[in-house]
Length: 265
Image 1: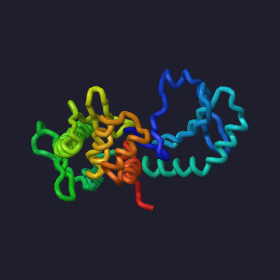
Image 2: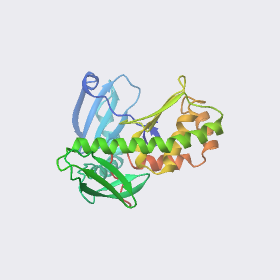
Image 3: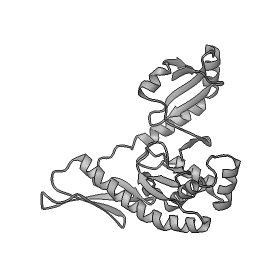
Image 4: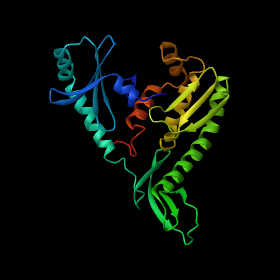
């Protein structure tokens, strides 16, 4: 399940050779830097991408310059609003594992406490307890080792939350998946292979509140019955989880790539 912008699936733009093959050019339109990609499409398509607010305009090969300018001027407020939001979120994306730094588990913030083990061979350990997350490390430890310890903790936590949730919903739906797994995904909260009856969940869901995890689980299980996102899928979701639209908006308000949730207005 990809994050959405204005209710539509949002995917990361092409990179590397794929991006270069589309002959992107960067220009300034209405005071905004815009990456323009000409390709065989029927209409102009405007996107703003995190975390830096990059603007990409995909247009038909025959599109005129005045058409591009008209669209960008018309959507300028929308573009700048998204750029402000991305800047606000990305300002706190770096992780330093410093004392007092906030780390989330199941939607709750925990302040980091660091403990240096007496033994140089001690294992790096992460434990969420009360209002704190206790990080125990030897005196010399790299950022990557700590990151892996957090990742392992989140994977274990998410798997332990998933098992009873899946059991509950599979019993209700009368259908079981052949397998499920947890992995890190950059653009999707979850995925389902209906033919193989296999689902994957993004490890980032360990940091979101349980109701949002349930929403993604139900979303992916619903794909066992309806593989697309058309009217039948939406009707099924409304039957299974009446508040699914609000949960989807809440989930996407805190993007996958942002370490901290958005600040309240």
